[in-house]
Length: 185
Image (cartoon, rainbow, N blue to C red; front, top):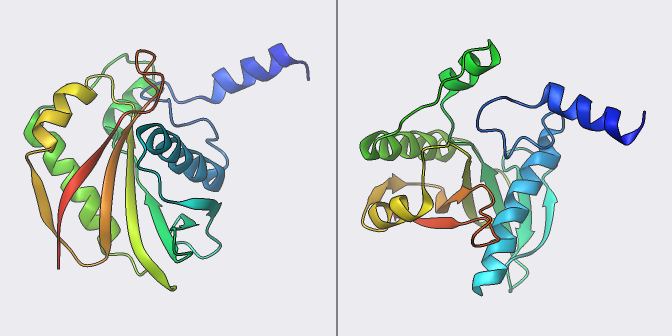
């Protein structure tokens, strides 16, 4: 198979809606590590990266693990923010998109936090970090940063930190992210 055939194959299997983080659709573990690495890359650029040695976790959950500066294990759980109905409609040939309002974004993020906080994380993890990637076309980093910085999400039992990660932005040449405010128990 030549390079052109490989590109055609990729385009054929690529999701048709909000597909940026779908690079390795068939390899879930590779995709999850890639998403967390995107966060790490942007954290490094902003001077806030404090993790190293990222690998896929053998015991899911969490999806990935890394070490903090003290060499303690940190678990990373990944869950995409995407409108599944829009994905399905686009896959069936209808070209639609979801026009999110702020309260819908808050509710969807809260639902993701609740879902991931309810999992059983086994292992000696110093903390669990949730990474929520999104490539939703109407979700804008600058607009959401202003409102998310002022919003606090409900209490969590296991999730210590959460980040909303946006797809690559050509203007900033990185993956913009927002650290979400969580109330921990």
